[in-house]
Amino acid sequence: MKRTGAMILAAGNSSRMKFPKPLLQWKEQTLLEYQIKQLAMLPFSEIIVILGNEAETILNKVSIGDPRVRLLNCQTYQEGLSSSLKFGLNYAADNHEAVLLMLVDLPLIQLKTIKQVFEAGVTLLNGVCEPFAIQPQYEKQKGHPVFIGHFQGLNWSDLHGDMGAKHLIGQLKNREFIDTNDVGVIFDIDTPQDYQKALSIFTQRTGNH
Image 1 (cartoon, helix red, strand yellow):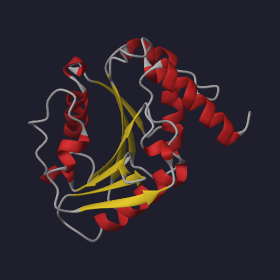
Image 2 (spheres, one colour):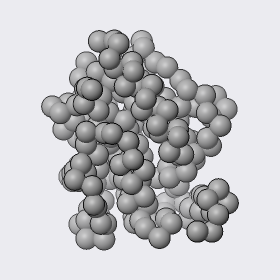
Image 3 (cartoon, one colour):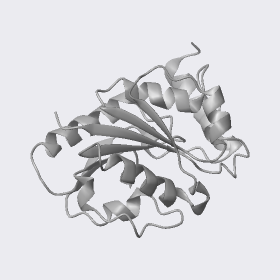
Image 4 (cartoon, helix red, strand yellow):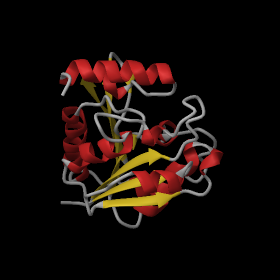
């Protein structure tokens, strides 16, 4: 199987939250630990975590058990989301044919959705040579995670500010969308109110355990 890495972007300032989002409590662990465990259930060759803001604090508080996890510190994270995305892609380009991009603040994405995107991506990766993307959508709204195959053929050097993968995906002729009933693909946590709402949805979905 061609090497596919997962990448969690977790470098942001969390300015509206006023607390590092990777360290928010989520089902008796941190949000970052939860996201890593979700991805660890799939056969990624590596799980790359891009840190930036409060990196040292996060490293001291987060416990990682999976040997596939690589924590990288992006020094230029204050330039916006694009800086950590570029930093991660530059690293991944030497090691992987494809990456699955995740944002740390979308914890409601269901494992079955991640699996669906991953499996569709791996299938296409073996069948085409040019860059492509696979993206889930909920009620026609495009979301995460995004699988980008043969991404070395893309130009990400001109990404700047808070441009994320959207600009990168815009370069592609080959894009596929997977319709889901998973609101998690578009539900990100930006504020304390979002966090409480997400916790409430998650608790209802999983029960109180």
